[in-house]
Length: 63
Image 1 (cartoon, rainbow, N blue to C red):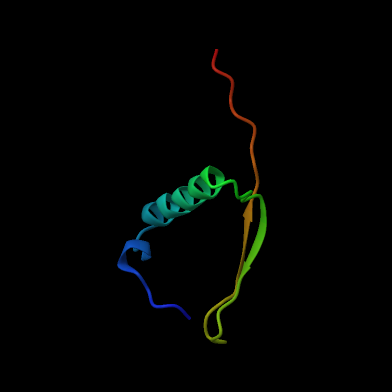
Image 2: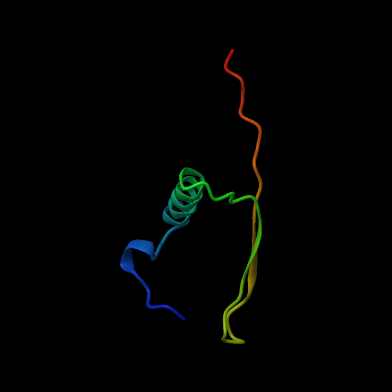
């Protein structure tokens, strides 16, 4: 497991969401399609595994 970087160590839901937004925007800016599922596995059996789903949504139209 990589060392933890305090810049990427959220302690609140808001910080977590901001980091996810930052990663998705950076991926798009670098021509990486972030759409799809990513399995996040942890080597410890005491820590849950997760699936992260990223789906493009339609922009709202301004009226």
